[in-house]
Every structure is written in C-alpha cells, then in structure tokens.
Image (tube, rainbow, N blue to C red; front, top):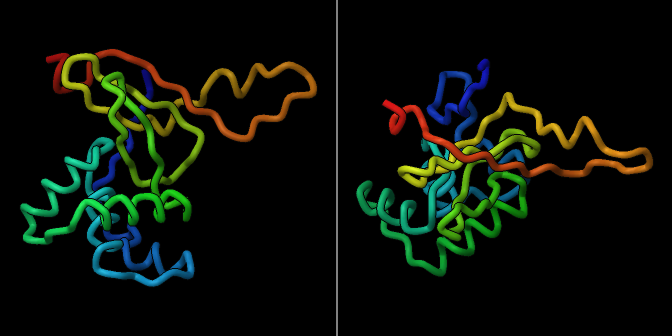
Length: 147
C-alpha cells in the first residue's frame, strides 16, 4: 500500500520540545515541554486523559486547566493539531504536516496520522477553488488490531 504511519519516536536528528517551542519564539516552560515531549514520543494521537496519565507516570503532575491551556497554546502555535475520533473525544498529535489523512482504528479507537497519503480532494477541486487545509479520516484496523 505504500503508506507510512507517522513515527513520533525521536531520532538523533529530531528536534526536542524545547527547541520547537523556542523556534516558535515562545518560552519553554516545564508544562509546555512535558506536554510536547509526550506528544512527540506518542505513536498515535492522545486525549487529554492519555496525556495526564502519561505525565503522572513520569512523576510530572499537571492540573487539567494548565494542560488545556498548553494544548490550546500549542495548537495556536502550529506545534500540535487537534482531531476528534468516532467517540467524539478530542485527541492531539504533534504536527509535522497539516494536510494529511487520519486513520481511525475501529477496534481500539486509536487515531494515527498517515503522512504519506495525500487527500484526493486536494487533487480534484473544481476550477476557482483554493485548498487551504484538508482533513480526511479513514476507518479500519491498525496493525496491532489486524493481527
């Protein structure tokens, strides 16, 4: 099929959360770094509750209000994007390309960013239309659930 799921795991060339925040000209606070680090390391989009649980496991307690503010801030900075799943729960993913397809696993409910799948709508717009953003979601089974 030739599609690749976005691999959030860091490589030696990957920018750190602090670098990304500072590159945006913003203050790299502990909360911002912790949340963005969590999203950069995630293999799939995470809900508020997922992020809270992961941070608590790392001994980094963050209150709900701060978490919501950091996620809103990061979205406004273009560092993360927010999407909703079939369960209508908002999930967040570190942003590398705004125009890509989201894959919703109908079994486990996880959402994955498929970076190499260009939405067909971008290629077939009628004359006079200009694409600013495409958000396409497909459903099926993720590699773990399809075994």
